[in-house]
Length: 270
Ligand SMILES: C[S@@+](CC[C@H](N)C(=O)[O-])C[C@H]1O[C@@H](n2cnc3c(N)ncnc32)[C@H](O)[C@@H]1O
Image (cartoon, rainbow, N blue to C red):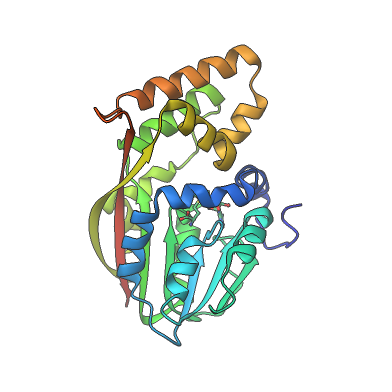
């Protein structure tokens, strides 16, 4: 089930289905990048009693991080499957609520939140300016915005390139990776926010190429969807490219030490 809410823009129905394929296993993806998510939470610096919105929350990792401070946190996402997992994973002691909504059309009043966060999330909305305007609209004056985004030309960008090559889809009109370019983020958000930028690298470890393949296919919707649709020969070619790509991360200790570069954006609402 997806898009039970008419809050979802029609052009986000297919992405909602795709991301939803990860289900509860998407949380293993958030676990793998949990150092970057902790960095974002540190910059968000939510305080007890504040209102926080986590846009494109997935299974709610960043929402849970923010709620640990005692803030009242709302997580939104287009995928009902991921939201169901987020609800299951929410500790009852924390003030956390989740609802189905689209980053391009947030169902909240102007200035409803003290702090707004989106970790590797809002970057996937199709209309970047509309999503950016919504982030600004719901953040109160003096409030804080934190974004974590993959960077163009980085290791995740290269991996997305492999997925795109095997999917054979035309590239999106606006690349999600543009959100990893400070100048582009300034053009989207600079009028509404005073912005600062930091770069970071997320580190994760796998036993080998088999483990990372299984991990991607289980929890990461875009890879799961592609693996489900390719015939046996095309799947083998995709899998071989994914293996080759990750082999250069092999350490002398026999582990894959995967590094993923990101941009951390912190904004103060003007
Ligand atoms: C890579 S996951 C990130 C999830 C989580 N924020 C994290 O840090 O692990 C991308 C998420 O963006 C959501 N998403 C994509 N487009 C969206 C949109 N237009 N509005 C809201 N959520 C969206 C997907 O459903 C998915 O949960």
